[in-house]
Length: 211
Image (tube, rainbow, N blue to C red):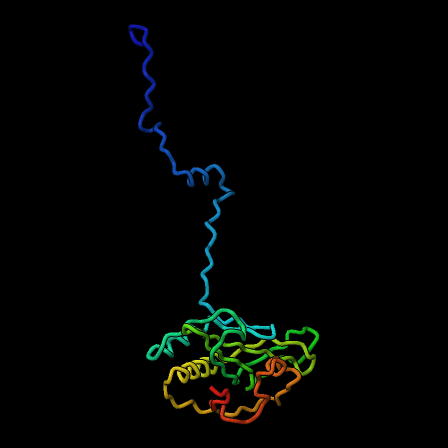
């Protein structure tokens, strides 16, 4: 008390001053057994890859950039996203290579290679194109397998055909026969659709479509 009866102001001494802790630190001090959870990690997306198929027929638009790169010096084509036999102005049927895995869990066939995956390359108006690739069935259980196309042969055959249709004279790559199981027309979706070359030995770059 002062002489005038006033109360002395209760100012805290420096040692009594409180510092404001950051929210996270105060939470840790009050709850030592509970620490804030770190922010969830955002998964990094992988580069686009070619989707493998188990359907009878499939197109591969994700391979179009590689086709466009192969055609860069000649003509720019756009991928036609509609898988249809209607409206095309040119077509060509050939084969590419690939591997097939049986997806039937009760079958023991596993994976096998094939040098005769049927493919139909089509050209549409306004510099558009697409290519339909046909699947095959398992020789053991007869069910459709999962087709893994060989991207190199796909790109070679499609780009070569598009160049030829635009008047580019290019020597075709050498075709090499591979030791794969005999072609089964009854298991080939391309044969069923009437577009497969049915295993006939020929130059795969020979123009048989009449265009």
